Image (tube, rainbow, N blue to C red):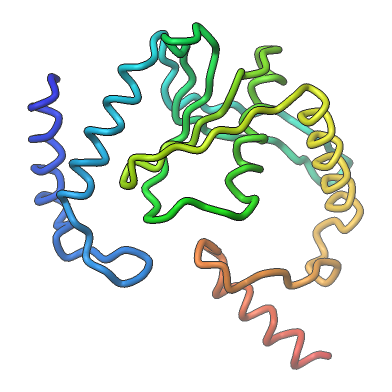
Length: 198
């Protein structure tokens, strides 16, 4: 598929999936022109790299006890060799309308570095988050020490989960109002249950 065919395919799928009436998380209608421009920017990013590994899923067992098994899993948008530097890099695509200033995406980038290090014994020279709608990128570089420290943090969290076990009472409610909480209704039911029994 050449570029013109790719653009045409996107617009055909847009219509087929009826995305003209689909809204984003803020309630705004999706704009196909924004996504065509994002696609153009994404292709330019891809062209700056070679030896692409797309959408690799990396998973492995992490910790377990007699009743629970905890695994680690991530799907990495793109790993490649950057042509300009000849360095191994990780790329992640964002369709956000603003550049994140909190630590969530930094931790995501660190998690990708951990996954790659655990599987391939490689530390990426950088992880670049490409905000395709905005045409900007944000880069993160992690040392082996930072990766190992993050693994220790995950180890502590896993120990806590193994200690708490399968009894929901052992867990705090946490941040249930996050817009990406796919279990929000279940969380609200649990809050209601605790309020009734507490």
